[in-house]
Image 1: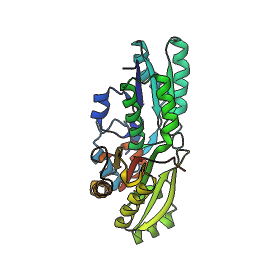
Image 2 (image 1 turned 90 degrees about the vertical axis):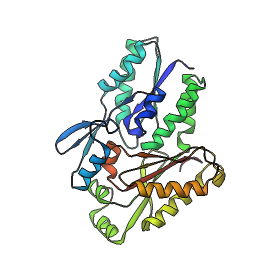
Image 3 (image 1 turned 120 degrees about the vertical axis):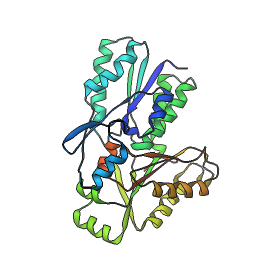
Length: 294
């Protein structure tokens, strides 16, 4: 097995068991809700269900990035153990946290001249970011070198598709992603915006559909268009959801019916507290491998 450790941010939105079983340390982002700051620690400090209940009751969380000292604290024990670090970071199109990771890299490589710290932009978020971490770790376990894995990530990260829809526009209105007038009008008509992450790692609105049934069908149609080998797609598929498991399950069921050759059942994860601070409840995100993102 290659002699380096993969790390990432908590915003990869995978289960705690994923990180523990694979030995992947994660760095916690932060959020503040009801005047108190918490770590984005996969629901350990505050259960994710409670977090979304607070938002539904009117709480308006804010988020903060990881600073360079926190990245240093995460990377240093790995370097001291004699291993290199490959850190895969949340999309630079969504967060500036990668700059703090790069500061930590520069400082630590001066301190440990015989070790390497590689920082790679995932250009992804939530469980799509997590899927990229998983695929990179599979390569590490198969013996891929640090340099080869970095090259593979940079070559393949735009092939991880991220498609989202939301049936609750409240947090999008609060965050300024949708105007108040458009949001209230859309809510009244049951409009569900369909969005994706573009090649720059930014969340882009694509279309609007009236009603969840239509947008659920359409998000799977997008997968048919973009997935590797179309309906014969044989790769992994993940979904993340924010307090709307039934909607996510409906998408997963339709994906499994449409793509009979999937590599295992669709995995459903929770959108964590930092990404969820911006989406609010009611968001479903679909992730798969396909053609290069536009």
